[in-house]
Length: 172
Image 1 (cartoon, rainbow, N blue to C red):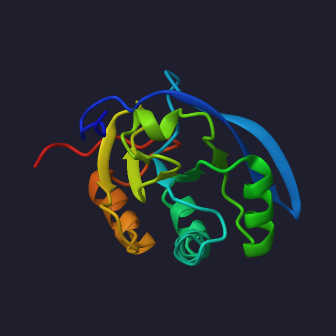
Image 2: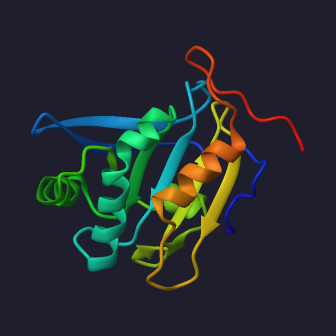
């Protein structure tokens, strides 16, 4: 299955995940479904907890997490490892955004980014209505989309929020 295209509805999923807050882990189910969100959601698929490049990628997103938060955007990291692996990864690196465990051939397969036992490094920006507005699906390799590029895309795609909602920018 190929990756869904920009302008299409994002595949729905519910995955277990963890989020570290105040040094403690909160376990929860994270769903992308029919409900409307308050702002953009950044799904960052990454191959492996604790690998050098994935650690650099997720730590760079963490370093700029306040910047994403300031844009009204959420970031969810997704890989095929379980929540125990994610908890160790988050604790070791101080990651406070949710890390979701897609260890049962779910979201990564539906987003067209699963490669056997791993995933392609990929980023999807999804609007409040669940529509994919931007994506980058990497070929094999070590590069990843930097947080500055993702934030630029959010600013390009969405006007400044009014109240608690983002609206999709009018066509150019």
